[in-house]
Length: 141
Ligand SMILES: [Zn+2]
Image (tube, rainbow, N blue to C red; front, top):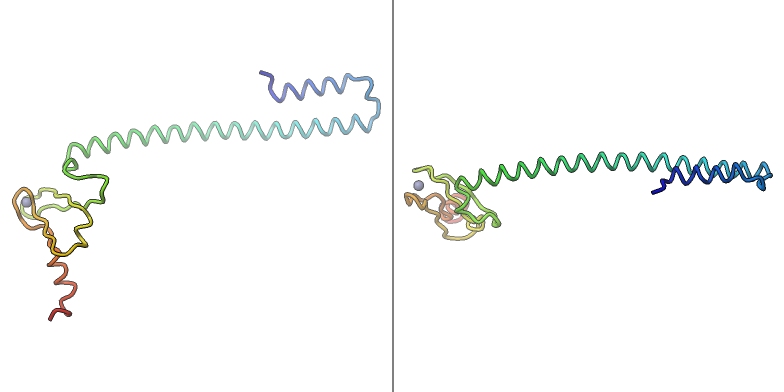
């Protein structure tokens, strides 16, 4: 395919070789226009080059990110994450007795009368009533 540069060179050849263009003023204007076209082509080529570099760079970032995601989710599967529902905001707490990692819905933190117990040893890990007692001690006494 003919490049823009080749089209401009072709046009310049026609104008230079055309004996019917005798007026110096017209020839001067044609030449100025062709120079502007050269400038535009230079700028455009620079933009295209910068764009290609950017695409390569983004491609590398995308590749690295995919690797990181693979590593991250592979690690997660090996651990306790299967017990959770990752699409919900989850709280993760370690049981003080048996160190079992327990996951529960973040929403439970704001509910009344919720007690989270360790599925492994039944130790109470989180109790909303204890939190309320601490926060509103003055009001209740
Ligand atoms: Zn436990």
